[in-house]
Amino acid sequence: MASRLRAETTPQNLQDQLSGWYAAHRRDLPWRRTRNPYFIWISEIMLQQTRVAVVIDRYQAFVSRFPTVQALAEAGEHDVLALWSGLGYYRRARMLHQAAQFVVRNLDGQLPRTAAELLQLPGVGGYTAAAIASIAYGEPVAVVDGNVERVICRLAGWDEAEPKGSSAHRRRIEQMASRLLDRTHPGEWNQAMMELGATVCLPRNPQCLVCPVASGCQTRGEHKTQPRARMLTREVAHAVVERRGAILLERRPAAETVMPGMWQLPLLRPAEPPRDPPLLTVRHAIMQVNYRVHLHAVAPADINRLTIAGGERRWCAKTDLAGLPLTGLARKVLTKLGKLTTHAPAARPRRLRSTP
Ligand code: SF4
Image (cartoon, rainbow, N blue to C red):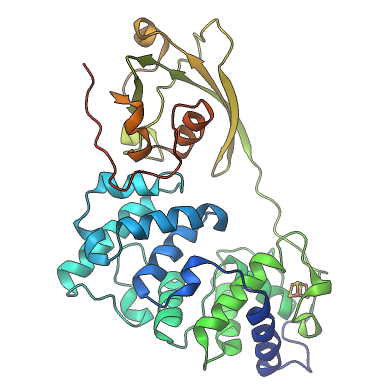
């Protein structure tokens, strides 16, 4: 298999083709209307492993509530998680919060200006550092995310199915990304490469007929792809328990959950399902697991008998639900059940209090 660009293709050709395409076809996304490094940082962290459509809504609420790194640093973790609710991978929010506090405490409230210096922030790796430095400050560093890696492998005719962890594979991708980089407009170039991967050079169905760099591509759709990760399936059931305008929520112990600190509906014991049919059944995917989730109405008197003990429980007034750090699943089902009337968290997230 060939292992470089087509003989007639130069980085300059590719830059001309891709830059023209990006100027005409780029999606109008809120974080592309700014070069404010703090806003770019927030958007890059949110976009890791989360779809753009979900991020648009959450990004705007987040930067409205925390418009500066100082505002984020001063916020309580509860408030940060509430604004992150629905994005998943909540460790990102905690690291972002810690990084904001680090910036205020140690860097006089100023984000570092280079990729190398940005790496000192908690939760900022090579990809995020290069994205912030190139887009906000124009540093000529190439971004390599999953989309860019796929585009480069196909352009160069490299095997995409090669083990992701191979350091030699990673090194040659980074070298090629650096060779192709438009050093005059690095931020635009990096975004154009990511946009091509996200909208044209798709993982399983690349749109080669409309691809702006097809003439320089070694594979043009004739490539091996990574096998799709096998999804597991699970059935779970949650209790919908209501009392005097309030609903019972719980937080599972940190050792039991991938979403510590987030509120959800109490888990039902699998061995003793309620006799009545579920109020609602939904599908919900978390990482490599597809859940089929059943929601059952449970009377307050049956809580201890039917639910799994061990979580911290609180009654929450329905009017306060929107401002809580709810799991994405809890937000989804409470909305479908008509208990949560607005998707966006309140401007000031509410604290949960016990309801006697
Ligand atoms: S021609 Fe096809 S495979 Fe090559 S970069 Fe474009 S979309 Fe990807």
